[in-house]
Length: 139
Image (spheres, rainbow, N blue to C red):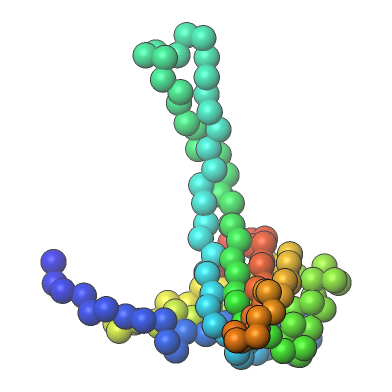
């Protein structure tokens, strides 16, 4: 296997399309983000006569998951996500992850479920975290 160069997240971006301008707008003052990760759910099959007395996991449906972003606090930045949260409006998120070889783009529909400011400290830049519930498949 060939050696893979280390890569950092610098240059990665998050864009939001809330339908207001019908276009993706870059989110600025972005410090970190966790892109969505689809999960295959399972249910347990437990019967009194299961061979070997081993619980069997049966696949069910895919859960599109959750994702989050942490940003430097500003009133405008906070309001950018608080408005669709309060209105229960579905938005589209476009995560662009840059590495040394290529760029990965993930686009998902979702809802802002939480918009929470971090603790305010005298010697730290104030941040806030936005949580999203993904409500459809990624493209």
